[in-house]
Amino acid sequence: MNARLLLTGNHAVAWAVKLSRPKVIPIYPITPQTPIIEQISEFMAQGELDAEVMTMESEHSAMSAAVTASLSGVRVFTATASQGLLLMHEMLHWAAGSRAPIVMANVNRTVGSPWGFWPDQTDSLSQRDTGWIQYYCENGQESHDTIFQAFRVAEQVLVPAMVIHEAFYVSHAMEAINLVPQEVADRYLPAYQPLHRLDPTHPESIGNTVPQAVFQKHRQDMGEAMERALDVARAADRELEALIGRGYGILEKYRYENAQLVIATMGSMTGTVRDAVDELRDEGVPVGLLKLKLFRPFPVQDIRDAALGVPKILVLDRNFAPGTGGALFQEIKAALYGMEKAPQVHGYLAGVGGTSISPAAIQQMARRAMAETPSPNSVWMG
Image (cartoon, rainbow, N blue to C red; front, side, top):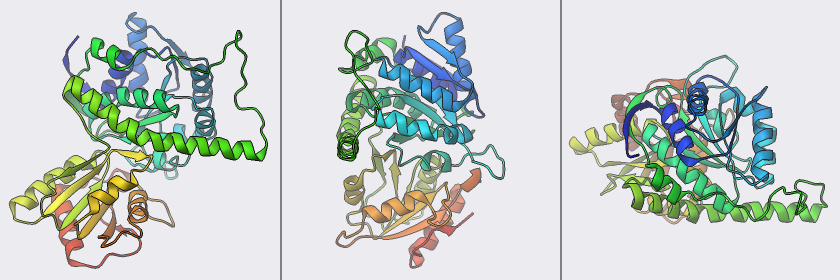
């Protein structure tokens, strides 16, 4: 099938899941992720999905079941958002430590308190040290395509992966989605056949108590797998692009020629920044865009290469960590530490809590950053 359908971002993910042929899908509903599992359940009810869809009693249980199923040697998918992701926190560590290549869609939503349902990246970014790969997607088409890449990378390096897009701006927004044809998906994602799995005929133990030195070696192995994931992710993107004509890289440089300021961001705000950059360029203002897609593992060398010759970087964060500011701002500053002729890095908190940010507002932020010295901490804007 080679189809183009009008879908929400959530349904674009559900279609990618169906085409990826997972065998176990533990689920628990939560706004604004629920349409993903509703569509998956509909596929199953119609006999279009050959998978065990398990309705669990909580998100913690859903991830527990996902870990167990993955360790039995099958492809596993689940999805969550916001408070559900936080409830999974303990099991996210178990999944990563067990080297279970689960793929999970997370729909970015504010975390309480106060209560809200709006797009904000704090939920997933608060899990950035759990050992999961993290992809941030700009739109539904990218989320659809990234599900395949996430399975490809996770199953090669044995590290679980999140595919992340934002509530409502992507999750419920309709767009024309070019589905990956089933024959292409099957060629790109052969059946998952791990070397090690829970098998009564070949007994192994996973997650047992170990001495300190073994634990340290285990963490080193996880770190090495994350490092390999950078090259595997680049290759997975190139290979999928060769099959379907769409590629994203792990980061994107847009209108970089002679840029005196580059605006760095990730997620749905990227599209708005792209429009703002085009309008500034039309006015003769030398501004570019740096879109980060892969946040974990953090592509330090790629960021340093993208910063060469750029006088200033303005980082827009749709998240806020009290005491440190924006997560992407802090990560980019750390990546550029010690770099000869490193650019000045400005950090603006824009769109936190789902606040709508217009191209005109981004243009004002860019002009301000070009005219002032950066603050060591993130600055509230908008």
